[in-house]
Image (cartoon, rainbow, N blue to C red; front, side, top):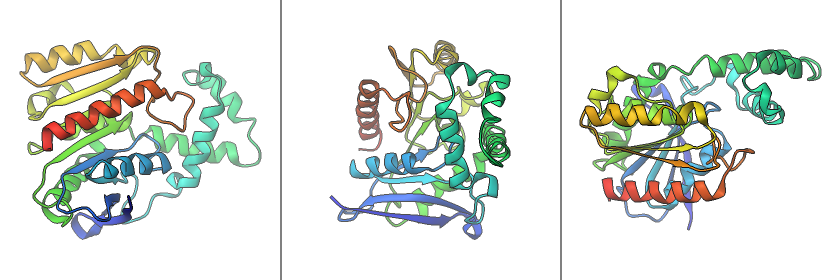
Length: 271
């Protein structure tokens, strides 16, 4: 099976861009999946995930939330983000939540790497407010639903990971035409946005990702009280980012089950 993959500019004045994948011999138009990035942006892992959904029979599209007019700021260029990812992966687990220990490890990097890595970390982790991305998310679903010839007139669903998990639910609260959203270990939508959600929402968490997993029962209760369609699953022994097969946190069994369930949901919602 061959895939047609490309970067696409879209939105008013082509302000935004994203990574598109579709089977090269598929009969189009097809329903579309918006694949929402982790904090690292649209990297090789997110491109690979986008291609997996394309191989499953969708137009898959990953908006690059860090690019404006086709360019990322210097601190968020791919090589800079990859350097941060490599640094974070080598940290002892205790350092992730301990700034002093993290800074001590940062100081061990050679040359100007401590400054470069620190600048990119600041840029990445200061951009976690989902409201920063509302306009681009709405432009993305509008593009797929109304402008992209490969998916025009078809249903659109969303899936996201970490930051993208939160964004999937956020998009559901801003796009009444969205057919469904799946959150992988994402923060819950803001309380004031829950009433605006019109589609089914599903969520996956890792048991050992206690900070996020602990929020699931309250989200389920709030969604139920608001009359929303929500279900979640917690995977025993799984960490945060269990779906990311480029990280130490990867859990094959949890990923396999969650991906199968996600495809089942999407087929139900837009099949």
